[in-house]
Image 1 (cartoon, rainbow, N blue to C red):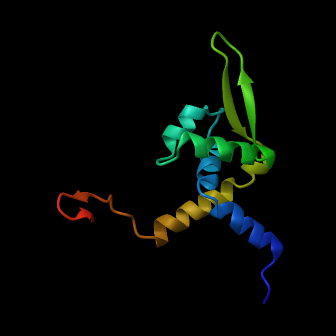
Image 2 (cartoon, one colour):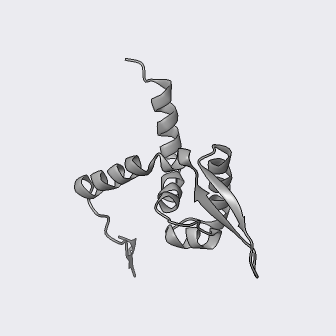
Length: 116
């Protein structure tokens, strides 16, 4: 049975590291999120990778970048309707993961053996 192209494209999108994490943060936000707030909310996400992913998600019309004027103008990112349409799917994936996947224990560094 041949895999449908739409599923393959969806799988590639979801497999790209941090795509779903960034979207989850934005679709669950009542207001926009700044670059630093996004980076701090997603463990392991580097500024370089966040910048690349935000540009990709913006090009896909899933999010938009807004200039917020004020005494200190800033950039915020918000989910567009196309991105917000993934809210239920992301919530279901999270629910499934909580019920079905083991919780990873924090890896500690053993003084003689390295990481255990």
